[in-house]
Image 1 (cartoon, rainbow, N blue to C red):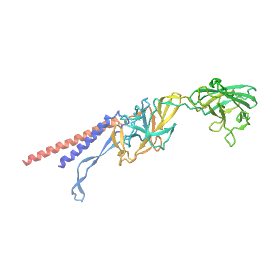
Image 2 (tube, one colour):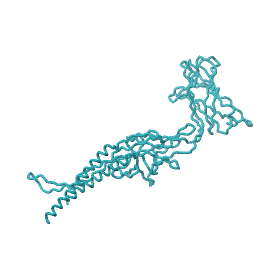
Image 3 (cartoon, rainbow, N blue to C red):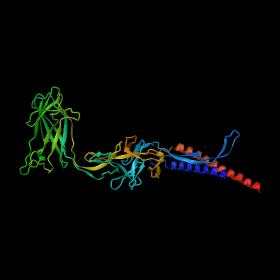
Image 4 (tube, rainbow, N blue to C red):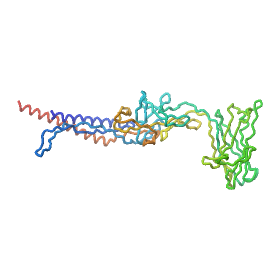
Amino acid sequence: MASFSIPLTGLEADSTALNTVANDLSNMNTTAFKAQLTNFADLFYQQIGSTGAGDPIQVGAGVKVASNETSYTQGSINSTGNATDVALNGPGFFVLSNGNGGFEYSRAGDFSLDSNGNMVTSNGLSVMGYPAVAGAVNTNAPLTAINIPVGAVQQPLATTTMSMTANLDSASATGTQFPAAVTVYDSLGQAHVAAVTYEQTATNTWTYAVQLPNADYSTAGADVVPAAITGTLTFNANGDLATVAQGAGAPQTVGTAAGDVSSIALNFNPAATNVLANGAAGLNIKWNLLDPAGTPNISQVDTTSAVSATQQNGYASGQYQSFAVGSDGTVSVTYSNGQTQNVGQLALANAPNLQGLALLGNGDYETNSASGTAAVGASGTSGLATMQDDALEASNVNISTEFSDLIIAQRAFEANAKSVTTFDTVTQDTINMVH
């Protein structure tokens, strides 16, 4: 009988609404949980007649749940101080491997590291991203599991380039020397102090001499300490470095034009007998005279001679210490030698129809024909979120809204239940009249 079936549809729909509210409230503290809202729609109508004006008289058949809509609004971001925690600020999902060659998606960034250093979710799914080779991330490569090289040792890098930002006092008397130094590294990671001595020999003219300490060379047998690497620098009337003569060679213009020179060759192993005492390969270093903009690094003006900065590209070996995730998802590792190296970049994805995503539990989602295929990209591109390390996104459940919805659903359930008992009373009275 319609008298019973109609309120029963209401009871069923209101029960779904109550369950939805209960689920939202129970997940108030679940990382990155997204609240849901139950929407209703009326069922088909039966025409039982028409009015004198010809208008149809229609009676409804009840109500149904039209949708359980998920709210993907941003949750608040809370700092945790845990390096494996990552929060998303904006649209998108982390990409996870389901272990079967497919992907799942999540906004819950409460990750951890497994015994192999792989970044995984709380339910053991691998976090996917773009690989890095020698510190360079390749966003065109297939996604791979993000791995942190815990316990790894970074191999040393021999110095191949160096620069010195310095000023030589133009008011210095002839014969004035100004000592400077640059620390460089050999192929075994041992540090060597390259002493650079500038000496003014004439107006706007200085010589340079570069040498490693004698103790850095082997003295066994026929081995001898090589002579210092020397040359001459000249400056123009504005104090800019104009020419350089390497050794006894002719002066060459310093610049970036064709035929100009921009560096000095420093070969600290000019002969087979001049070997480093620790057995490392000989050092061959390019001393850059220009900065990236093409401006000379060394000047000569009337102020005290001084070195403001030195740079070189070598380093000693280092032990893994920690890792961090940048706002673009780049995962960088820090070693005990002070060096950092990129080991990958977390990937993000988004679906054309978020309401079509399948909710799998554990904060995971799956795409299907309703949601459309997920588009994968890098953080901060194509409308995707940026990332915040050492933080987590909180649930977006609003307790005030949920309690309001709870009261409404409760009242509706009670009203439909009252309809059932009313119709039961009416039916019983009808039966009694017959008897």
